Amino acid sequence: MSIGSDHNTRGQAAPGESAALSALSAQLAAALSDPDASDQRWDLADTIAATVPATPEEAVVVISLLTNPDIGLDAGQTETHLTAARSQEAGLRAMAANADNSIAAMDDEIAGTPAGAATAPPESLIAGAAERAGITVEQARACYDTFMAPLSAMERVAS
Image (tube, rainbow, N blue to C red; front, top):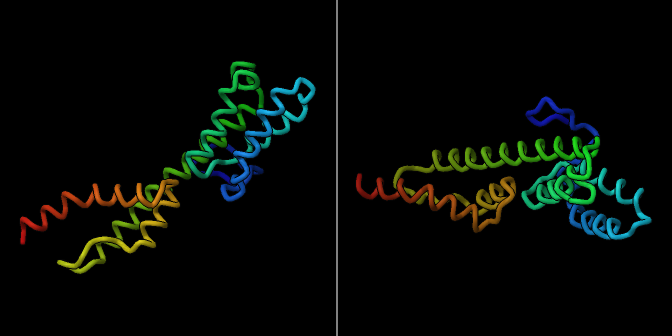
């Protein structure tokens, strides 16, 4: 799959499949401490590198592979690192597109609200925007409230 990039990311895990990244990271840490686990370490690194992150937390796991002093870029560039960088790029592009889509969805919902009606979007819209943007519902609500405060003030002055 290609997500807004010239890089080929086919064969990588879909974002929904990346929930196991934390477990893989823990397994990799254990393999790194075992001098006899070289093959296992690189198998785990390859799996992590090929997973497109769907959330900022998952992106941190992929980046930590690149910055790990034992097998990261400092230890020597490999195809695994290029794969990880491409997965990271694809994941970040998807997260950014989802964040843009979430804001656009809220704008569309607000635009359809009759004049003088409450402008708070339904909780399901906030929850969906939060999930797509990889943030909490509370963070999405705070963003919405921050964006709407100046508009609410303008509406009160115009009334």
